[in-house]
Image (cartoon, one colour):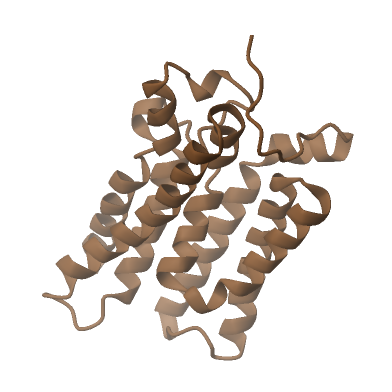
Length: 216
């Protein structure tokens, strides 16, 4: 049902646009959009507000997708026998809300943590490969952006391969929808790292550090 999918996206969007890093920064009179990378995600939050604020932001950015999917399940299961596809659309909405919040002129985060939440909420069995890829690359290079980009790419590839071998729990047109959404979510996260990709190529990308940046 198309209207059901649209409502699920809107529910997800409402949760997605709650940007914890931005609000923590505001509570400390720091506008994250004007410091560091200008991003409101967990990495820039950690760099400028410290580890605790960064971890809180990371946890919420992941958890809000789980919350959105649960709300959709709680609402929809009264009307449909299988609500899985609607939960996927709720996950999509969460990522869109995080990346393009209307109250910030549609300029939000880059969607890595919300994509992680998307995987945890909807495809937890697919988490290990992207997680290992991300951790390994960050540990080896200290480039969070590189780990994020390749991690997201690995998730999209994993879903396509999994679908080929019948490991994705959807069939027919719903399977196509799910694969398109998963590839879109992953591709969007990569696309929003375009500035990071340029810096990686030029060799001047910021490396990860647990220490907050010093501000004048």
